[in-house]
Length: 248
Image (cartoon, rainbow, N blue to C red; front, side, top):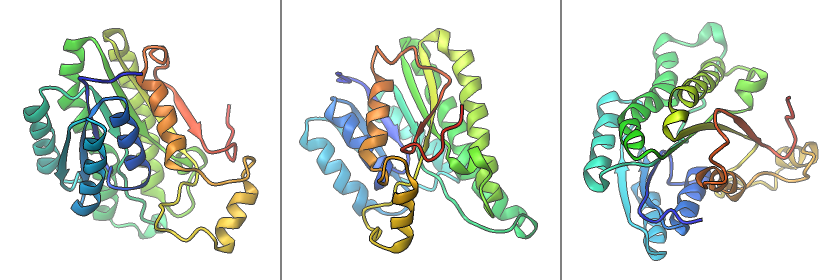
């Protein structure tokens, strides 16, 4: 697979799943716009690895829950690369709290980060994708949205709404060469997390695959979606969880 000459923007790309996706895309020749909310050092590390394989990298540190900031990031990416052909809406926040105790401000904050940022970015980059007749959008949901997350009402609703965005875009813009799909990851702890604890061991034992997920597991699915052979996959929710949730 060659993505040489194409540009991707990956939100939340300083660590874990976003980092893995960015590195996979770069390995295929894709230029990558990296985004993080605060940790520039982490993004610099990813950028160095992106450049080491011959791809270009740009870093945009911003709060994607801030409308002005996310629109400025999109404008900057377009100014630097001309178009963004691949959009990975990965960044999210997952605060807990009982439904009756969640404040309206906290509710809106989750929606701004988990849903509205994707709305703004899709609108910013879709015209260029349509003009080229090729584009790939990958959104993220989660098991909270599938099963109804316990004590995470705003997260569950925002992630379920991402399904609706995915379905709408896939139908409206699939005929124009732009595919939109959504991935539901299982348990993917960051490398900084100690996974030798009894809680994580219980999660391993509960998973039919006998292990936890890695960023490469997600990135491999994204790789498929980027190919011409994967171009007929559109409007789908792809579960990458080792079989712990297997809805049909």
